[in-house]
Length: 231
Image (cartoon, rainbow, N blue to C red; front, side, top):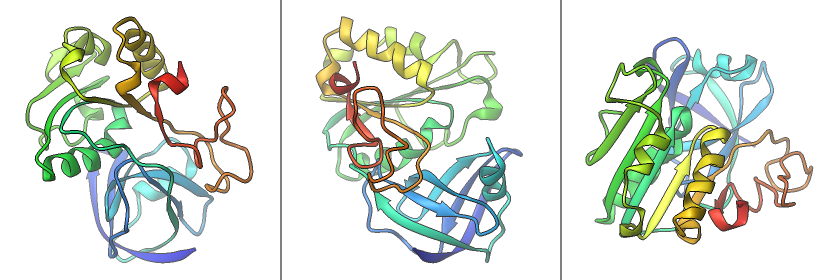
C-alpha cells in the first residue's frame, strides 16, 4: 500500500463525489484500485480518470470517501484488473454510477481519434454525473427530469448495434443482465465488454470473495469480461 493526498473533491449533491489525487496512476480504462479511508475499511473503486475515482455513498466507507476534504491522506493498492480493449468505433452504455469508469474510457478512446457514442441513463437528473462531458450522447431518466424519459434498455433497443466495433457496458446488475439477453438476440455478445463490480478483500485473486457464477474472479480475471463469458 502507498498513500496519496486528496487534491480536489468535486461533489454532485450529497451522495456522489469525484475525488482527485495528487498523483496520477499508470493505469488503463476499466482498471480499479483498492482505496482505504484509514478510519474505515478498504473498498474497490474503478478509476474515472488516471488520477481520480468517482464514488457514490452506499455504505459507511463510501460515505466517508464522499465527504473527504482536500489535503486528506488515503491509502491505495493497485491499479488492478484487466482493462477495456481498444476500438475505433464504439458504443458506451452506462447506468447510474456505472458512468464512472466510462468517463476514463471515453476520454481515452476520443484521445486516440475513435468515434464514440454514449447511452447513459439514471433514475433522475440528481443521480447523473458527467452528462456535460460527452458528445454524440443519448441521455435518459426514468422520471423524465433530464433527457428522454425511459431506461437505458429503451435507448439501447432503438440503437443499431451492428454498426459498432465494440460495445462497452457498466451499471446496475439488473440492467446488465437484461442487456446480455438483448445482445444475445442481436448476435453482438462477442463484441461486448462488461465492467463488473463485486465485494473484494484482496483485489489480487487470492481470497475468492469476488468469484462469480462461472467461477471467474472479478478482481483477477476481470473486472472487464466479454458478454460471451457472462451469458
